[in-house]
Structures are given as structure tokens and as C-alpha cells.
Image 1 (cartoon, rainbow, N blue to C red):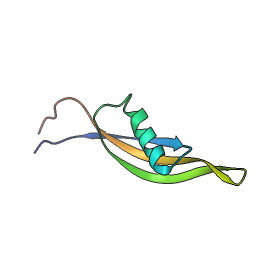
Image 2: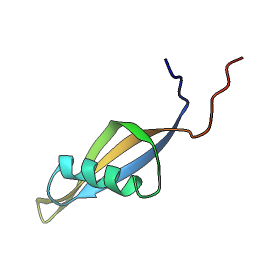
Image 3: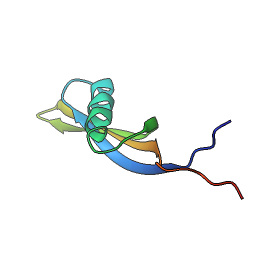
Length: 74
């Protein structure tokens, strides 16, 4: 079994339409600058209210991606 080492970063995706869209937008945008994304974890969901209505959704996520290069076993 191949062993991986992951780096974890935290981002916040936003959307005016849904929580799911905020997640997808965050992952899509992160994939422009991060390679080898393997997983995400939603850590917080919140939103902004304007004039008594939901204005937009905010989803904080941890994203894990595999570090490049060979792993050496000791």
C-alpha cells in the first residue's frame, strides 16, 4: 500500500444560492492553485443576512492534498 503525506489548508467557500454550491465553488477555486486534492471536511457553516433574508452562504472547509515527491521509509 502506498503511503501518503497530506498537507491541510482551510478555506471558506461562498455562494448566494446554497451551501452545496459554496462547497463546490471553494473546492473548484482551490483546485486552481492546489494539486492532488484528495478530501475535504466541512468545519463550519454560516451565512450573511441582509434585509431579513439570506444574502449568501459561507462554508469553512479543511482541504487535504497529497504532497508531491517520493516518500522514503526508514
